[in-house]
Image (tube, rainbow, N blue to C red; front, top):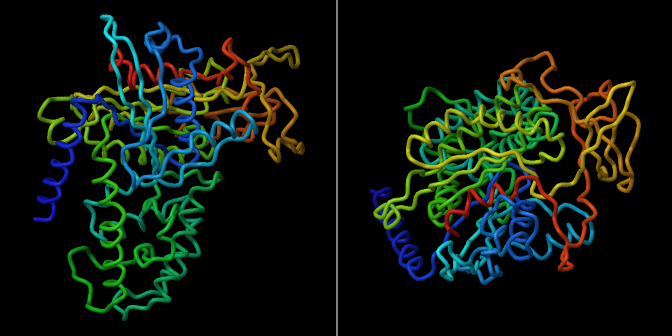
Length: 487
């Protein structure tokens, strides 16, 4: 009965959004990605491109001059924080620092005045909704009981390399008996150790991606609340009820509260209203961490893409239940690679998402995959070494980055040998360390399977005096996501 009324509520909200769009054509674009995938940089570069212009030959409406102007406008949702575009631009342009990562949902509205291909003056409103990908991984919990989630979480935690990160949590877990009386201190300890396990899995050395519940990693205002004070337990076979007043009953109640307080409102108020979606993926971080991290990323992408209510736009669907009709998967940080590896990076992402992509394609949604850098921080060069010319990228490593025994000061520019991605994406699942050789090293003999973080570039001024943000295929992303609505 609850789900029935929830669907009625969603339909009412969809009808209200549809009525508004009749007078003000609007696209609600969701931007998400797992931690450190570059969401904030992508949105900042996208808004900068629309409002300040730049070199975008693939983005037809801008390249041909049909966009008269684009400007920021007050966002429609008063309860949602505003995306701090101005602060992020200042960090990029003046301080040459990357903006802070996404830690909560935020929104920004851009109004685009343009001339259609038939010569009429029109206006399109673009509402950009930025949210952490970790929250997206919570949506499957809507269909899972506490018992099912516990079993799945424990199964994952006992598989290498997660089992190493889970050692302390598992030790405490072994002391807990679900049927014992509820114990607040035991629940607090279990929740803390489980959260530490999730953080350890996300560390660069493990590179895991499938890590729900998302708010355990980004608690925000809910930090310390009972809704975030639960953890998996070793339980009997699913189907048995927990004893009243037991630790099991407490954990189940708090899990259910998490669903009601955190997951369901996010789905209803934000996620279910999206028209189009871009999912940013830091595939190279998983590649660097090894085959287990690549497999985990594959599972995370499947979980993410299965959350979307996708399909071809129809009148009745738009009227009563919004559908996402375009999804772009973007492998970010392509500027860390030589351009000869960009096609291989796209092929890898396509392989990892293939099962879910097939499902989305069959439902009528348009899906594309691209390797991009929303802000390009390197340039390419050939470096002679030992009678061989190596294709390199040149950039300024962030202060504190290390290659071998050298610690960079944040000011010194270096040439990095990025190595080659495998021609066959399936080689990423090999355990011999040969899938990706030489990434971000000053010599192919020093490969340590880590790429360096580099600072934003020194920017050039355009003819209008506006700094131009260099990019790789940001124009292709814009054309796919909104180009058809500007024809």
